[in-house]
Image (cartoon, rainbow, N blue to C red; front, side, top):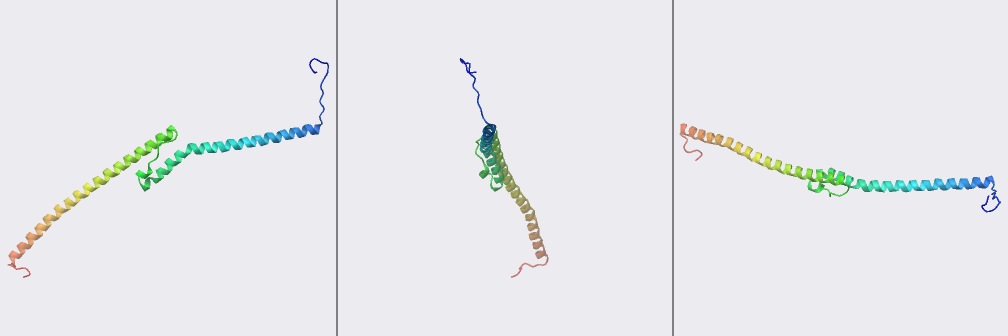
Length: 147
């Protein structure tokens, strides 16, 4: 019924037209859903890439520790967790560098003392051999050795 009148509005449509409209709407719904899914996937990939980039940089720096400690340091940027990891990683590198330096210095000191010990062991032998030669020369009256 149309308000204010006694008339009724009746629409006539063929079943074929309704089926075409239904199929068209279904195709449009599938197409828009696929497009939205594609946008969501691409957006997720971009966001995941942006979020994991600092972690990949940190991972590469960890691999580069072999080439040298000072070259492996990372910039402390990204999310709070990544910045904390980067800061801890840089602190670890500093401690490793300090320990390596201390170890090298300690090895040099140990080597020096080993050389001094060997020298002090060689000197008595040299002195003994010299005195022993003098004694032999005195016993055989060999004052003019080689002349």
